Length: 279
Image (cartoon, rainbow, N blue to C red):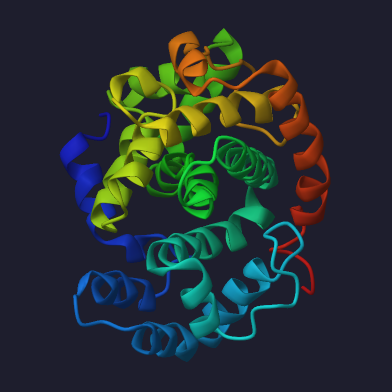
């Protein structure tokens, strides 16, 4: 019997079902939403989990992130990047620290998508390019959740996608009735991530469904470019269809895209081992 949407939503409500997410994640998510929460309180909470704080500092100080050796504390990271970026990076680091070892291809694809997203956001002068980087890192979070909660069914998804050479979202819809984009959106809502981040996670394969969301269009295009650059493995042998209107609305020239691709190459190579170095 296929898993129901209701059952999966209940599984997601308790994010501790994902073994890579420590209990402190729930506390951080709650604290950030409280109006009287300050940088010191959130920084102290993250710092209590030595493994988590070490992962986060390693990420923000890695060459690919852009602050090599400059951020000395969690509090410093919060001041520079803001609550929403750090909250997203906490989720990213806890998920991908494990994913980098267990599903290297998906991690590499997510990394490439993230870096391309940030480069394009900067090229377009969009606000909060680091939040858009987080959206790129987490755009396939729904695949991670599904593969963990219902591994047998998700193996079937992989088989359908590869044998029929269809996009993985098509196979997910056949097996579950919903796809990884919907699941990522549920997680983002549960985590109270900003609407522009939730939109990018939920609609990165259908950006036309969101009005006035260049962030969603950026992640959509970055996902496709990452596949074109052979950055990792998105889980299927196909190229997602491009939304031509979303591409036109961004207004990027082919020369700008070429510059983004060239600039991302070195960042990508520098970031590949950010979660496995020193282990």
